[in-house]
Amino acid sequence: MAYSSEFVRARESTRGAAAAGRARRLKSLLTAVAMLAPALAFLAVFVYVPSVMAFALAFWHYHLLGVNTTWAGWSNFTDAVSFNIFQQSLWNTAYYAVMMIPAILILSVSIALLINRASRYYGFIRTLILLPYATPAVGTAIGWLWIFDPTYGLANGLLHALGLPMSQWLQSPTMAMPSVVIYSLWHGVGFDVVIVMSALASLPGGVLEAAAVDGAGAWRRFWSITLPLISPTIFFITIVTTIGALQSFAQLYALSGGTGGPEYATTTTLFLIYETAFVYNHYSYASAMAIILVAIILALTLFQRWVGKRIVFYQ
Image (tube, rainbow, N blue to C red; front, side):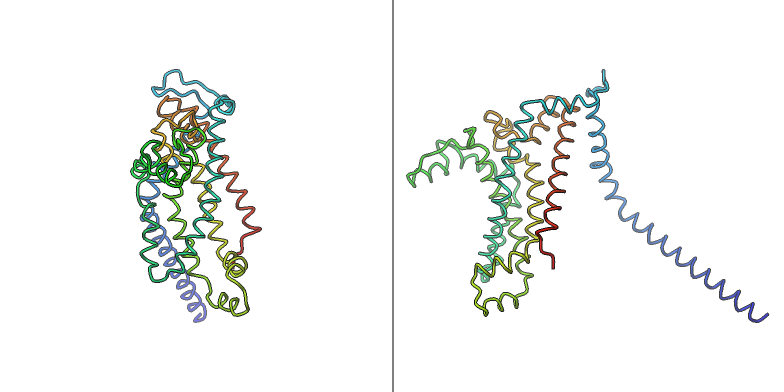
């Protein structure tokens, strides 16, 4: 009988401990939900719900007042793919990305390596490099409109001083996009430089010193040690730059004066989506274009991840 009483008390104690554990877990869960609720509500209202609505709109002929809204099926997608300006916008977006991605990688790594040597002025130079990124694109674009002015601009003044032929810059269909790339590099490279500098700061100094003692030159140490060790950071910058380039809008809008010109030379896909939706009020058509752009970005990101697993060195 005594054994049975002890067994009952032990079982009740175990049940009590389990109940107390469940209560603590429930309390922790409710606390986490309460803390995350504002952020989740913000995402739901401003990200998830608009995304679902935009996806649904792509399959309808939608009118702002809800009058004569009819089912469209895939017609918005087929019309978008066959639209010559949409095709040109895809080409412009790809052209911008192809120029931006290698340029931002080469510049960010090169500048980070140079700054890393200037240990005395490390903090000041890092702040100076990051400053353009912290400024709004629309505000700084006003200054660059003057720099690219074909008559009074600083860019042509410099070319003239060097004895080189001057350019029409933003007013030329062939030079408009490269001009935007120059501004985008100036504005955005600081962020990537700081990321690469952080990766360089975490490198094991003993490995580089041992390689130098063994006779490895600066280029060999960079190619065989530094570059593989910072390859995850470079891979991250590549993905972020690719997504940002395919979603470029603010700098193109500001530098083209909101026209996407000349001759649609700076009309990227996101610029055309904005114009189609908020200038011409073709929301369904714009939604179809947006879904196509999202699909392209997703496909490129998955491809980059597939390549990254094979060439990126993870410690």
